[in-house]
Image (tube, rainbow, N blue to C red; front, side, top):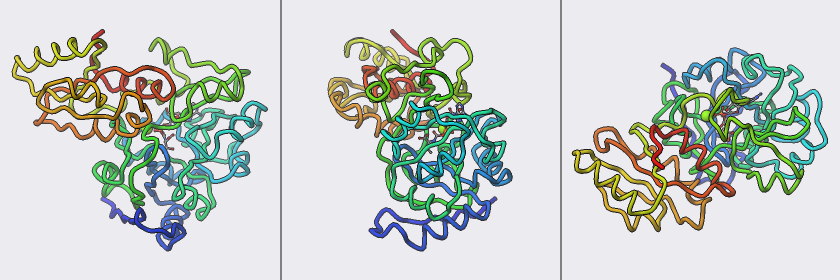
Length: 343
Ligand code: TXA
Ligand code: MG
């Protein structure tokens, strides 16, 4: 058991505080620190220190073949970790960093081998969050950081989510309030002739196309068949405590599935857009945000998923959302979290 120091920063106006310096010192000394980014909270450790990185895998219960993203504060620090930067990758970095996108590039071996889990490539990103950037600048090392949840659970979008999962398993936690995007970064493979989206996320396919023209999507994302290029995409993920069912179709169809389950004596939780939620009746109906504002739905998704508890709820029913813009990432996460999909 480890004592977890918790620093509260979200009400502090001044970011470069003694708390950040202390947290950066923890990282430099091989300890683990969870911190907010613009997507979700990350669990960080010195990416050049194999022993420190091993602590991340242990705290999360993460499979040892799932590589970590190295987080840095500047483009210079990013290019210091890679062997070669294709022109299109540089264009994307200039267009979207700092921001919710991770670039998979040929590794030059600077990071410890358990960061890349033996792959010749490394995922690198510059997060767009004042606390994350200040922490990375102050630590002045690349910081390996997966999402700060127990493996398999939804990613944390508040410090309390991290606390529930990892208290006494990590050395520190910076509470910086709720994260902005609410879903993880887009992972884009830049080691091939054309960029390939390996995980949809905060930067959308449409945004990427606007910069580089053609972008491919890992076919495994669409079909679910074969071996994904991002090792992490093969695992069960984002799973709430309670089984999640996705229902495609009209409000009447969703209501009929709810009624069927209520009749069986099941306690049925529902999550839906504000518009749909107002029309549905069940034990607990939770609103994700307006259908016209998919960014709001993305932002609330994990918090609402985590709010359903065993004992109070036997199953969660959720509607499907249009796969445009951030909707692609929302549906990717919901499909991976769901045990059943009714079309
Ligand atoms: O928004 C995010 O990306 C958050 C915050 C904390 O930055 N991090 C995050 O990390 O979501 P994680 O470890 O939960 O997911 C990283 C994903 C995994 O699916 C992993 O397999 C993939 O990125 N990945 C990392 N390095 C890779 C590489 N070299 N090649 C292919 N996929 C890679
Ligand atoms: Mg994760």
